[in-house]
Amino acid sequence: MITKAISLVLTPFLLINFAFASGKMAAKKVDYKVNSKSSKLQWTGKKVTGKHSGLINLTSGELKFDGKDLVGGQFEIDMTSIVVTDLTGEYKGKLEGHLKADDFFGVAKHKKAKLKIKDVQFGKGGHYDVFAELTIKGITKPISFKADVTNSDKAATAKAKIVFNRTDFGIKYKSGKFFKSLGDKLIYDEVELLVKLVASK
Image (cartoon, rainbow, N blue to C red; front, side):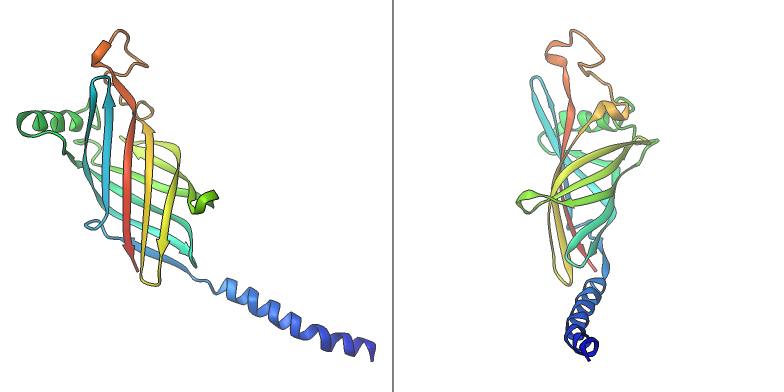
């Protein structure tokens, strides 16, 4: 009788726990496809005498969610689409040509760059700590950054500032790490990318 009574008491709790666990398992993993036209990637490079900035196009991408939680994703960049937005005319054309040349991104041989998320942790302040691999000029290096992510039943948006060291990818042109006495010709190694991904199911 005691065993039966205990069973009657525990059964509702077991059912509730099972339902809760099933609900968690039912939080479906969903892929959101990145809209390359609505998304935006802005770059900034700095030198001793100032800085330059511009845009570059995304060709494809996806964000992976488990319920409301970001769990993965990736995006691909069209390196041939690099444009400079803070210059005009002849200087704009010269800088765009130089960025596409072998001194920098060598887009004739390396038309695509890629970022692939390897791990995601929910960080303090409501953002995600993202650990990824960045591939530029055929070289892949680990990188980490913070991202702000929102998603609904139909759409998702991810924003992040990604900073990488260009010399990690063989881009040594006028880097103080490899060339001495550059003076005001020195170009800093860090490149900043402001990324906004807009995606939908």
